[in-house]
Image (cartoon, rainbow, N blue to C red; front, top):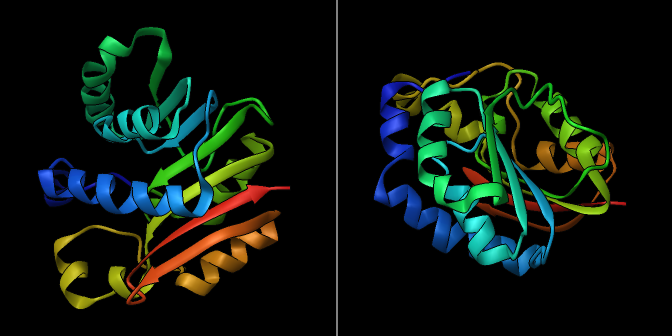
Length: 197
């Protein structure tokens, strides 16, 4: 599902950059550590800021990234052009990734899976493309946030079959991830790091 104009504005704002940098990154580092020299995938890369954070703070040597929105892909390519061969960006779908099995050391989700109608497929795809021992870093909006009347009015999110903190944790474990860390903020948003064993 594509973002509406308000959410695009919010996702491209300095506030979102600050929360990514100082909340998401710091939480991920505390729970799962770095990925030095790793080949990394970002699901739903938006304007490319997440890719920069992965390269600058997690030590990845290469980041592949995709987004469903062609406009966001164009912004990401422009932002990341100076990174050269260190980055590849394309238009794609988190539920069906045409990528080789066991090809990444880490997968990052800075808040995309709640937009995916078949969200369990996105979790399964992240597991599939990770190497054994690879880590899945997720920041997600949870059902109580998505289904709140205010956000239902302002933002466009799928409403059926949304996950809360415990449902996402359970799904990660059922897919074969060992949870290295899990943190929820007021049941509205959550961070997870899972390792593929």
